[in-house]
Image: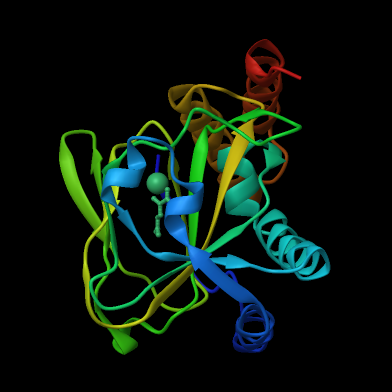
Length: 223
Ligand SMILES: O=C(O)CCC(=O)C(=O)O
Ligand SMILES: [Fe+2]
């Protein structure tokens, strides 16, 4: 399942986050690419101070955690520190798969990958996030402040930027529920029981779906 979160950040939050990023430095993205990703990655990555990084992580983690659609579809156990990536003219990140295990001290599995768009799409040409998903090729170029969350098992790429600057914040999420197919079942059950609650109240059907949802989560969650 792929979810997009429109307006994860409002205009004020977006301005504050872009201001914070502007006050830091950038380094060559090659420094954080794995040996195979190095061959296809051309971008700049933010190198904030410890305090700046902590502020960015706090703002973006809180924003994501407040989104019901995100929590109900992702079951986040651990959210990696955010990376900020900028691609100028010629910048791109060719087809790749994200590392399965990430982090230095605390190692976490990447179950979900997240891009938060920080630039107005009218300000750059190209720079689509393209992925192979269930035998389809999908492209995303969302508004500034919007986010997309997709399974890390997906082969994906950022197409070349031909003009302007594309800025995004990126993170990876370890989920309590490892398998995308199980997360999707939980999400559907949760959505269905909320619809029942809204339309008919706390009926017997609501209770049974809630029971099934809770018991499946109990079976599938690794804690
Ligand atoms: O910039 C993006 O939207 C995705 C970047 C990416 O795939 C990565 O850093 O692994
Ligand atoms: Fe990636």
